[in-house]
Image (cartoon, rainbow over all chains, first blue to last red; front, top):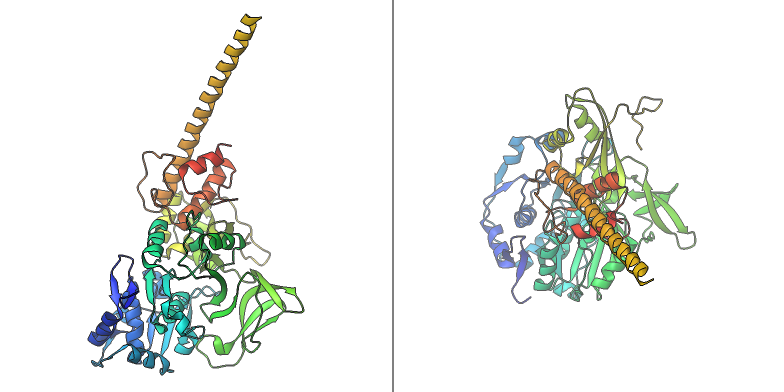
Amino acid sequence: MKEDIFLVSKEGIRYTYHKLIEDINNSSKLLRCCYNPDTYSIFLHILTSIIYGKNMILLDYDFTDKELNSLGIDKNELSSYEYIDNQPITNFQDILNKVDNNEDWKLTLFTSGTTGLPKRVTHSINNLTRFVRKSEKHQSDIWGFAYNPTHIAGIQVFFQALLNRNTIIDLFNLSKNEIYNRIEEYQITNISATPTFYRMLMPIDKYYPSIRRITSGGERFDVNLSKSLLIAFPNAKLRNIYASTEAGSVLESSNDHFRITNPQICKIEHNKLYINSSLVGLEDNLNYWYDTGDLVEIIDENTGEFVFISRDNEMINVGGYNANPSEIEDVLCNHPAVEQARVWGKPNPIIGNILIADVVCRLKCTEKELRDYLKSLLQDYKIPRIINFTNKIEKTRSGKIKRK
Amino acid sequence: MLQDYNIIMHNIALKIIEIKKYNNRRKMIMMKILLSIINNVRENNGMLPLESIAENMDLRADIGFDSLDLAELTVKIEKETGIDVFADSFVNTVGEILEKISK
């Protein structure tokens, strides 16, 4: 790309690296929390906070008031800011230097916790850029940006592109046709996305030779899907990433089989994957092995090859987002008409799992009423798409709801 | 002999017309069921109901469904018809769903 474009927004606005530097220099206030729907503003906020060495909290823009409350964030905190000196960045190299020499800077994100409470995860810049590949080879990369920019996968793609001074084309939440138009118009070379994102592009009836690399992550790898992708993107190599909000990218492979290449950061015990705490952004400095809750099956004892098979906790992966059924059940049970609720995941060919709620009502109410109520309190992906009204929900002997 | 042949041919023609009528009726019924499922998903997600659907309508571009909406649609179609329309391949249009549920 001849112009020095940093980002093309969903609306088609082109922001150059020159404009990015100008906007960093012109910032006079820095909000502590980033709660913004606009991808460019989010990236600008992250970079400005790095350059000024101020820690920041990154929030999903679709968090409801109730969810923000449960994260311990009130409205005042959302608008709290600091004045910043006009500390000019003269060129792109200054940004790189600041990113390279800012070991103290921390970024806080939130993820659905297994206990029902959201978990605060705080990452250093080293953790976020651990998997960045920086070389001459990557200078011509043009990124199709397909993750939520407030989630760790999106931030990792941002750093990968930024540190190689690449152009980012925002594709997140665009329609299938718009995505194809942008791949062609901007000659996108790299896309990193969830299998759900790729499934929404199917079937692909054209070839897109500009794509050199497709990366899949956030959900279970889909072997059939990957075959279709390699036909549509004949020049592409495929990479599958295992990552989590707590640790970022951890393992990678070219298919659904993984191997532990660095035993200091990962281990398998009793068919479960553990990650060394040095990689995990939880706010403690202890040395321990973090339990991912992901169960694996060893395929080859000699090479150590394994595949992921399931989880040993109740988190449900919905199109790459983790939903905690207990959190949703609690919200449902607060509705005056609901006596009991059970939320579970049904395997689905499009989004991996679809949330289903079985509900026992004490008063008459409709699916639409419950859905509207949930919408005011929870992010969209946490809302059960099917609500079954029933007379009884089975409980276990200890009185817990029996999930399917 | 020839008369018999003509009668047989005539009866076959009548049968074909009957089958065609039956198939069209069946298709119309399926279309109606599908419209009501699509509208249920639309209304659950804050979209206005559609008055009609056509076979060439794209589920994403024309009906406005995202991945979560499509997932909801598949479960509701399966509940009504017993058929998982996305089981073996991705469907794009109303016509492709009709084809799968009319079999």
